[in-house]
Image (cartoon, rainbow, N blue to C red):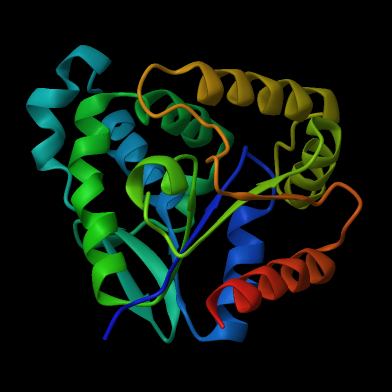
Length: 220
């Protein structure tokens, strides 16, 4: 039986993960957060003090895996559940940088494709529709203005100790946008056959509903 693959790409802070989780739950698909894989590699490199030029020689030591526990995706580094550890601003920036390294992308590429071959998935990231799943049944490019994305991220971080200022969050968003769109390997861009969904003026529920409608129409 053919599986159905949904690719959701977009810039940092666009709400891809949150919205994709909501949509996958409603449609009964498995949600795959590819960004978590890259963040976990970044954590591995940071913890082990591995410089960029030494990544290719050490990448096979990174035992990264996704496990679905009670229907939710958790990411493991070896036997450690690092799902929460990989969400810091430091790891976010490190992931944006290391995800541009060919050895890192090659290491994780097969993991992502294997999951998609075996399951109906909603997979989000930066290059899912353009590189990882170029034949996806539905491709969506999810975005929002940099200011709105910074507002959303700032509200998330306000509850945590050491919260950065709004301006710092906005500067981080702008920097990541530049890194992601200008990297040589698989830069962030909208696939030619992707549907553009701008959520600047939409809340989470409205955004999820819009994507459910697109998927339903294209796969029915």
